[in-house]
Length: 285
Image 1: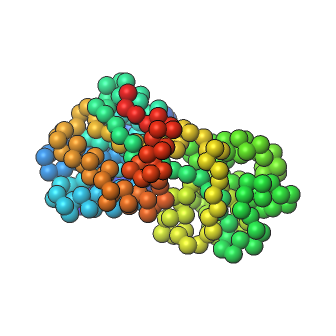
Image 2: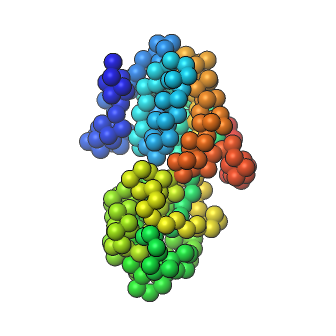
């Protein structure tokens, strides 16, 4: 069976969620994507992790012969469905509170820290406006583009950074365009329509954008803690608990974590990752 027939496609899932009256009103067929056979494993993750998981899953399949039925979609929608009647074997989601809620509800057996995201300023190649800091974004007349209405936590997180910097009013005054999607925003920085924006570093590592913008750090103390953390856990209804455990170990191994690093994340096994585990309290409940 073709992979697309054996799992919920990322775009199909997003369309299904958008079409429903409630964000997580998922059809019965979607609740049981994949199967419980010993030669397959159902893995759900938030969409931001999709590119890394696709590569990790390929490596796991080559090594073990186990088929991964993978879905990457909105973490909030997936999490809400899992708190209801949906089942999967392994879930990797954004926001620590979601994993804790799944544990407390008895839906997840355990979770482990997976990786962390970070936010950066991006400018066109050559950085013609000389933008390197949040203060630069507040310079009068600097053309800035943001996506404050982007799906959570994209827009909310960036607005929290602006507010914490104390420069929100000045930076918002420079907005030449409010995008609804961070992906749609990227080309406008690349082609120089805007001189700067704020995005997750992972976006700059996507094939269509890699090497096409300049990246400048934002002080970590400005980051909102909620969306920084990604965890991975085994679910209560995992069809093969031992296999699910092995898969989580594989995803958290040094080789797999290197893939997450390449995709713009901070691996949990790295020195910085271990620091963030302690700082953000990424511990099982």
